[in-house]
Image (cartoon, helix red, strand yellow):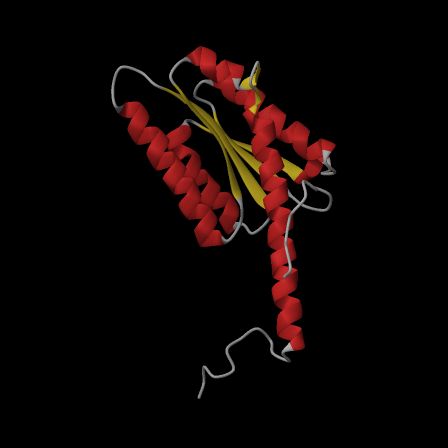
Length: 175
């Protein structure tokens, strides 16, 4: 039984961090943590782009746009949605996460979630380089592992198709 496990290897791959400017005191360290993780794991600095959007609500649209370019092995989306006194938090956090998952599925490219959803700004700061680490770094690690895993799975599918003598297309489709 074959097992497939990706590794956090950024060498030879391009990545993009899409970051929300809202709560920038939190999101900038998240974006910097993601870039740091990529470069420490083999990405050339020029192979990591950072795209800034106004807020978490805009993350999915920007991620879809960068995925449509077909330039990136994976995306890290970072933002910070802090609960307030209205249900706005629930709508923004839920729809942003759903939009990011949908974009990943549609384009078949990993999108790692570095979107913090916290009750307080202090909790967000603790996860942006504070006592709870840097979730931007963690998301980049997941993005690299998933990009590597996707490559492994694609290679395995190609090898299986070659063994079967096919080109990966359904030979019965025209019959």
